[in-house]
Image (cartoon, rainbow, N blue to C red; front, side, top):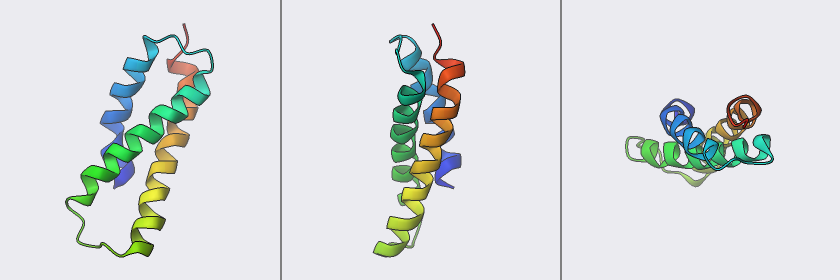
Length: 81
């Protein structure tokens, strides 16, 4: 769910980063993905009743990481200038 909630933010952040002309598009895409994943996990935290430390550490981190990987994969294609 974190990944799904992060996709709109990822699109917006990649669009904004494209105007900055990054020299390392994969790294910039990963950073944009991590930021989008953090925003998605923030939104998911409001609706999720589970708040144990193990759940948050495992699943939220996994969602943020997967969004970062998706950003790194999309970065070289979308952040070219």
